Figure 1 (spheres, rainbow, N blue to C red):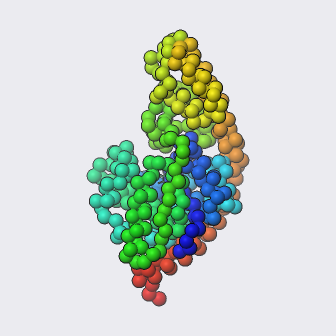
Figure 2 (cartoon, rainbow, N blue to C red):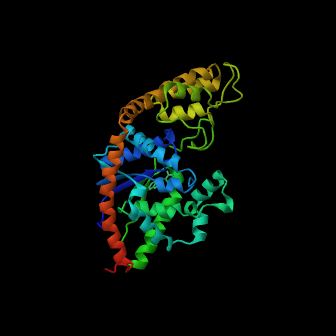
Figure 3 (cartoon, rainbow, N blue to C red):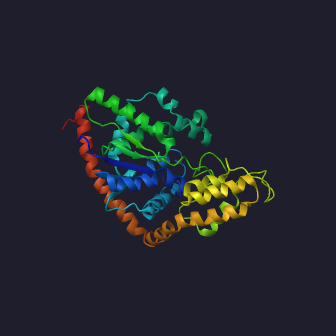
Length: 335
Ligand code: TRP
């Protein structure tokens, strides 16, 4: 373990394309850390994707390329960030098995993130053990390379907290091996869904994807929830809880103009269509360059897979070193 080296690591489950929620929640921080950290890793978390998609391996496989494309399109640069596939680094699975002994079942069941997701997916008691234990495998994802700066959405904070408990427990049982992990959380509040739901979710059908066309963006914005009592243009409207204004607050750079629009809207006399049209342009400004870059990369999927293959080789080398430290610490280094 080398102290004080900044090692950034993050990942996505390949279960769908990435959306604006990922962009403001984590990708912007990934890009920053790619420049600032001593080393950066990006992982396609296919094993984690399978924890609630065991019966659907095709979906996971197909989305490996999609999430890699999304990240490349946003500016993750394989020369600066080691991009790899989780399942192709078997040391992560090995580390997960060893970490399983450091966490109780009761603790796993208490994790608020996992609890929320279980409810959302309707698992109840019939939750796959792998899903319940995904925070343990996520600790291994991070620690196999001694990752310590982790850009994640705020919903992932309890998962990082649990990883830190594993660090503490491991170090106290087997000697100082891992450093504390620091989550890197975005300053932007969590992006609500286009339907006003508190979260934009891959499976909630309320997302604007980084690969959406302008037509798709327009359709989604036009269907956005504003203020149900703002029926006629001259009616005074509510800004708070209004999805369109919530998005303008996050994505529109011209803050003074937005403030002016809000005033007008509250007074009455400003129609929904005007603010929606503005939002479409603002989002198009954010997404258009990403979409363009994505299309470029998508022309050569083999080259993208090659990037992942090379990154995986690099990640494995590092994983082997960590595993030999770990084996030694746990006294399972026999030959
Ligand atoms: N759980 C994360 C998510 O759903 C994805 C992930 C897997 C991850 N392994 C990770 C994030 C390691 C950060 C670090 O978004």
